[in-house]
Length: 100
Image (cartoon, rainbow, N blue to C red; front, side, top):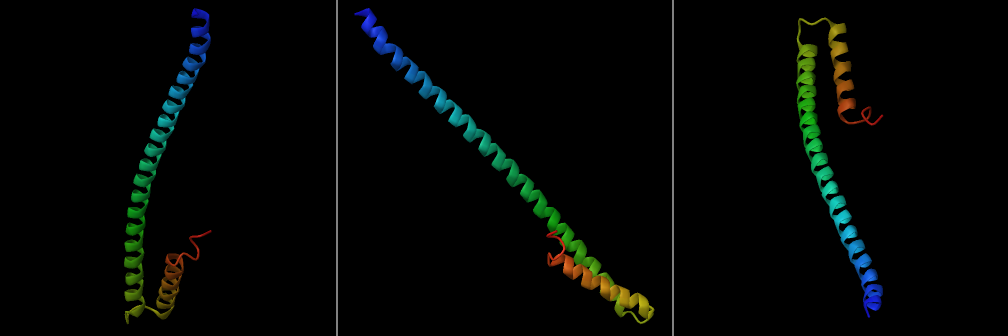
């Protein structure tokens, strides 16, 4: 009788241990994935803040160049260079060169 209980009990114990191990490892993977997503969200938020700061800097630079190029005391070659730089800034901010 004890031998029969041992034969039936051992597979049940192995199955139970396997199930607990599988559940625990699944929980750990889910916890790690959640932590990774949280970190990625924080990094994304920081990068978006940096993008906003860069966009403001580009807009300020573009405005400064526009003001410089339209000022009557600025020589024509400087004004032309400023206009070309504004076009370069627009091309960069449109993403045409940022994709590379």
